[in-house]
Image 1 (cartoon, helix red, strand yellow):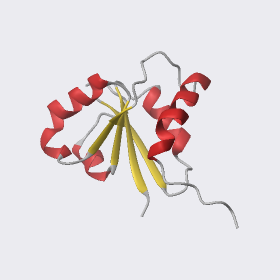
Image 2 (cartoon, one colour):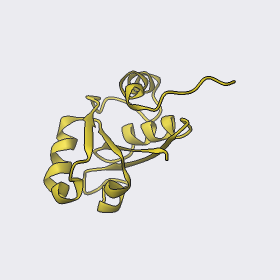
Image 3 (cartoon, one colour):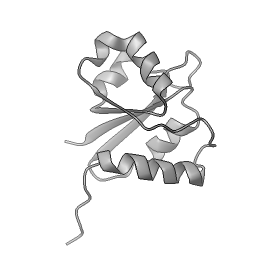
Length: 114
């Protein structure tokens, strides 16, 4: 079964969609993204939280908003804060470098081709 990663930022316009796209083709992984703000392009919802195996938020404030609004739905879900500030454009090379550095440790190990 694939590891289902949910990336969350504020408005789901820059950081979390970049992460979703960046890791979408990683073997053994499925990705989605959403935002905690009321005006997010794809707002966090109970269905996305139920789907996710691992939730990766960009900043601590996102974790706070998430747990305040969805405490019952989160249960024992693992939430990881990546500590990535809202300083980047969509698919910004510096953001991609940060995501690669901070997310790879949570991904399934790629098997070498035989």
